[in-house]
Length: 168
Image 1: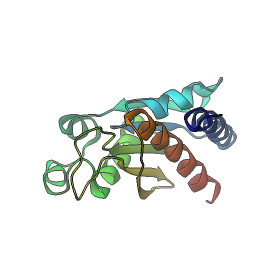
Image 2: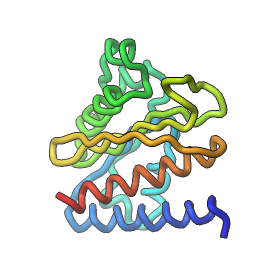
Image 3: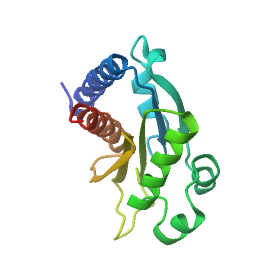
């Protein structure tokens, strides 16, 4: 089995696991995605019965969308950029509020093949999960082509969300 196929299977398993947890806890989840372009939402809603726990998805690719749809401050975007801890924190809070969801999972990153810099290389993805009125943030730097960076980011976001909810 190649790595990409294995990653896809992990994504399906994690999405189903997350769905079972959310359904059991009677919680609703939303996503606000940039570099993953709706992939997390697709993975979650690929599980039958996801309408019981999936509220909505927002693909906020542009800075304007992050500001207008999620309430990320223009100052945050100007000072730190779209791919930053500060931005994903604000995205997570804004997504949870907009969707009236218990959980929000957010990504913003540089999938490549270009757009990277010394400070923010291609493959850098910031993640945030809003849960229990708190925001947990992580960053990862993935390798591979654009599709593989995005797939790894989707899988990581799901795993991170499962871990946060299970450890509460």
